[in-house]
Length: 482
Image (cartoon, rainbow, N blue to C red):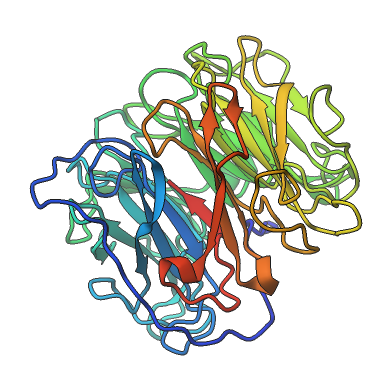
């Protein structure tokens, strides 16, 4: 028997109101050359940001969902250069349906090798006719005018589909120079790897199905790609649960990339969020997992209020070095470990001060501030030659001087985080969301970075209405991808 883990998505029970759509494409020229920069949808040399609002009402359908795109500029992310993508948008397959939650599973990558980053939407709740199958993978293609047209992957497809697209990740797993797409599926095989390049007609070069539970005892709930071994091939972290006595515990396993595809390797700490990043600048990606659950017999990797664990990378895969575990009780980390803080709920990686070491943003969306429950904070941990550390850590909330807004109960600031260098100055800015802001409408905050790291000075925020999307109870900011 296998137990399915819920990803970091929530359902608001309040009604959704109808709001008209407005789409504004970024100003680019038809001759713009693609930059080849990861996360650059329109090829102008600046990283862009996808913001999911999976509960947004589209064409009167509650919970149909949409994705807002905010484009990067030399001044950073610019909310005036944006567009809205939903199944009601011209060029996007499908039709809006209630509870499709379009946008709650996202990844990015250049799937057709044209130099523009593409956006992949795992529409796992989409029903396929009357067959009982569910889940489609929609690729929205990047180009000089931004994200305009899309294709559903049509072939090859797994024989059994049950919420295909439950989790999605991209990477060059076989090292052939083409981007591949990994997608989790509740039906067997649980992991499907579509070999790139993928054409704009929806055809992948090949498909490999992997039964992760049979191979490793861990079911595929969450997928995270990155180069742990430093060989130029992408590895894939599969996060899920494994049986432990009479119950289950969270656990992850690293599938290593090779010329013949993915093969199972060592196991690492479990959790519900993860990134692969080189935090100690030794040339190997490190596995950073976040487990927001408190310590119990079912969650042995957690702690009071949650924990972040770093399992270091090496040429052969996971290093034998003792993993580093960081909580809010770790020296230098602001705050204190308290029950239900959910430290590690969300994670993102980037160099915030330009020193060459990758830093980690940690969402703590249930942090209590004063008497306000579930107000939320974001903590930025610093990378160093010795690895991830609490030294120099910073914490931000709506109570931080310079951060717009006011602390309110149940906003869940830090529910999603993204570190991205949109301006191209060599320092990653911090994007943080609070999808429960204004009782479920949601909002996003942009914090700039300096040589001293992330700063609240000059930070700004915006909601769905600013980018022309339906605002009421849309959970704007539920997922951030760049």
